Image 1 (cartoon, helix red, strand yellow):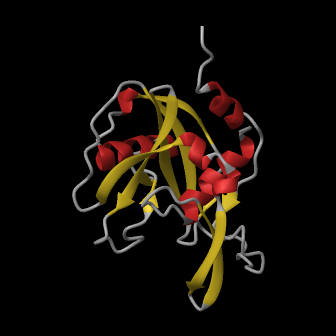
Image 2: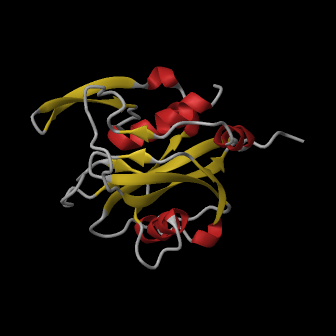
Length: 199
C-alpha cells in the first residue's frame, strides 16, 4: 500500500514554527507595539491529481481596490458570523472559488502572518476530497488555477526582489510559476511551509 502523499504536509504542520510577516526581509522596519491587527483566514487547498499534490490559487480581479491582479489564496477577514479564522477561510473559499466546505478535510494551520495592510492572516491547509469545477467569484476573482506543490516547496525556486512602497524600498519573496507571478504575503506563507518540509 502506497504512503499517504499528504503525510509530509501533516508532519510539517506539527513542526514548531514562528509567525511570519511581510516585514521579515525588511529588518530596519520597527513595528509599533500594541498595534491592532484584523484577524483573517485563508485556505491553502490541496488536492491529488495523477499522483501529484497540487495547490489551488486565485488571481484577484484587476478591478479591485486592494491588491488588484495579485495571486492569492482564497480567503479574507473574519466576519461577525464566522466562528473563527478557519470558518472564515472556508466561507471565503466557497464564495471565491465555489469550493463546498463539506468537500474539505482540514489538515491544520500554520502560524499567523502579519501583512503590511494590517491583517493577522492564519493559513489553514485543507485536503479537497473530490474533484470540483472552480467557479471564480465575479468581480473578485479573475482566474482560479493550480500549481504543483513541489514547485512551491522548493526553496531554490524563490528569489528576493524589491520595489518602492510608501517611499521606502521593500523586499519580498517571489516564486513564479509559468505566467503567474506569486509574490508578497502569498509567497512568504508558502516559503514558511517550504522551510518546514523536507524536499
